[in-house]
Length: 291
Image (cartoon, rainbow, N blue to C red; front, side, top):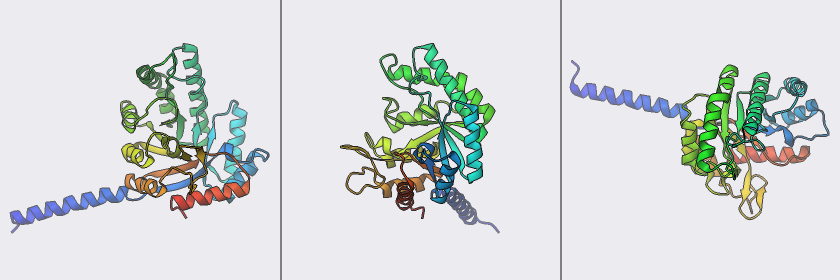
């Protein structure tokens, strides 16, 4: 005979099992080390650049939007030959021609840049395009930047993103916009769209916040990560600089684990030679416990 006590015990066990399953799905980060294409030695061909990246342990790469389809195909062919996955495209039109501009011509140019970025992402098999959604300046207040950029993204960018099935990932940068984790999260959530996510830059935040707090606030909205280190006195420094670096890397790694971040962490620093890039990769492995 099943008693009330048995029913409560069974319900408790089921609840505990479900909680354990949810926790297991989020337990621990799964991070792949990636590099930005502009950091690779420019004197080498694309194929030789990408082969070097693979030899140094970079399994993925982020590229920037290029002007010609011919160059995009060259990049794609070289990446495939080298075995280096292109995971993301960094849009290039959003600074000089922000979506928040009061000038329709600038907005048109910005939309065209995003359309090119999305099409190139489709060519590469990349799943994400990075977008700086707005810039606060003389012709755009904070509120106008918010409203204008959301309208343009909804009406003119997301239809293309849906066709190519590529995520539009908003990044927080020094654009006088989305200055708190609360605003960053709210801005993304207001789209209520599966292809609008967050691209988080660890180093950018140090100027006015703590990366680990932002990571926890963003949670599963985060699809991509940029790795930089920053000093409030001297600017950007090498990853994990023991004297000047402002990132608390153990706390950052802990926060990634807590949200169950699964994705690429792309180094975004100055370029350099093979020895420099090798050392940088080892720093990433050590700081994020990837080795």
